[in-house]
Image (cartoon, rainbow, N blue to C red):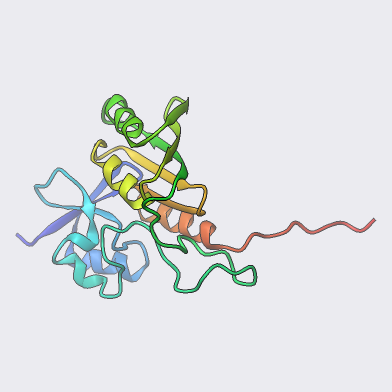
Length: 192
């Protein structure tokens, strides 16, 4: 039997899919290097770009596990808004908003890890504000260790207009990236 993969989208598993089907998903823009996939027999999902066979589909992908897209140009008022435009900010005090959707386990391990990162406040059942000098990608990397395969996470670095997330699936991931990278639209004013 040939190798097959299961894909996690929005906390639901789909598949199994053959390599030809995975290639087709990639060609359609439905499979990216950060999409979560597991080989047949595996229980833990990993970014598709980390799988040796699937990684060949993403030759131009950013090195994994970096969840952010980084623009090559500096911030400028004349340029369109760019998602993840600056580098990591270890050593600088940042403010984060962390939101999770825990479906497969207890939230206590995640919350304990958040409070270990710096002063934090839980303002909703699964949402926190955190002040920390740890980078966005390091926070995401540490927190996903406390999540199960059905759980999702979204972290926003409010000081640098960056975000990182986990386990959203290709469609939601694409929509979030697209919205985050658009220039803000000003509402049309009515004459009168």
